[in-house]
Image (cartoon, rainbow, N blue to C red):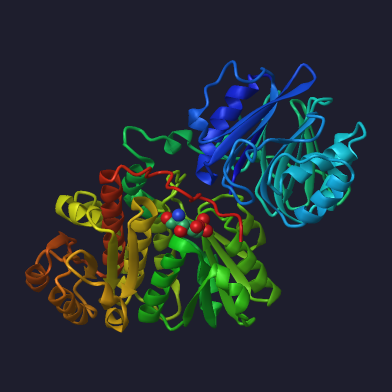
Length: 581
Ligand code: M6R
């Protein structure tokens, strides 16, 4: 979490940093700050709140070298003092950090005993004081020494009053350096870099770099290394809101394209076929929405293929022991989720073949997995995962169709149209029912059980209404006690093998006076009889239905959050890329 950006060149650093931080706000947005080199001094401004509250010009001295940070608090409350950049006792060094310094407490005691005075409660501040202690006129030498003392994860940028350079280091937190014409931009991801250059170096774990507007020096383990810049093809327009009220709804409307782009990219994937054919068993490891995509994959594989699949929440994978004959498939939109990365490393440790499925080029999981497949969702700015989920489904459905014994590729042809149809739905009555509730329950069975879980996650994430997803059959084992006239139940009732038992569940719910919002085929008169509201989703086939029902649920969450006036693209306490375990 947290976004960092640095600039050295000929432009006004303040403007570049502020723009960069705006683009990185999805990584954290409880406080922000900038440090700029100006006439041999480091000038700092920082505050609680969002970078959008900051007005450029006048607050900070101007210069052409600087660093910036947008924070998701881990150590210490969101406040101006705890906001980055942090400085040393002299004010000559300013640092920004993304990650967690695990040994900060010992370092802090040691530095305090040596006379350093700490201002904040953060783990990161030790880096500034270590620089003060280690710097002897050579930034690289100081960086080498400082990183040698740090345990944990970090992407860190440092400026020093005495130098016109940025020192940068990476360990288990992403950091890219864009190399332009007489300028460099360092950042947590590509988005702040792309407006200035497409030539990008992805730093690797253990890299220490010193960069200036016209020079670049990278070391790893004390040896100088050469990393050639990669050219990045990327359309900056795709990361703009272009007339939509929120990124989330714009991104929902991009889902048909995200689905077919990803499917096309997978067309000739012999590599994937080989991986799936050779697998004795597949274990899917992921978090949040990506985990739900993995659960859907499991149900589809069980139905269409002979390969057994299990799913594990990434943060729980450290407590299970994988066996070397399984393929571990790590799904992560960002490719940076710390839990997913730790799971990937554990799978490798146990000699499993590993496959990464991600939306993010050059992200950490792509460097460590044996096989990498990309979803083609394009940049997803809203914290809520929507089009990235649909793109994951495209890739996973393709994997199902390539698996041993599967014959379902024709079903894929209907999915895009099914999603497009759902985008036209109107949900006023359902929105009113949900927005007036303090608890919502979502249910589904079979492959629609993860759809219910995802519907509930999306709802609570952006509307802040307490919503829980359950398997329809589980309702009677406890949650039914919550039902009353004030507890709407969102039910996914497509035609097919789950329908009969779901209708039984609807009757049980109706007998407890709980209003039912049913996602169902428009011709299903039985559902229409029982439900208070039916959101009509035309039945096509299981692949198309799973995608369409999920998109419809995303739209309902969006409408409810909008009605309640929530901060839809940046919900409280969340961040898009969760880089702490
Ligand atoms: O980047 P990842 O796919 O690894 O992220 C996993 C979760 O943090 C993520 O899906 C989260 O649940 C979303 N905010 C849900 O909308």
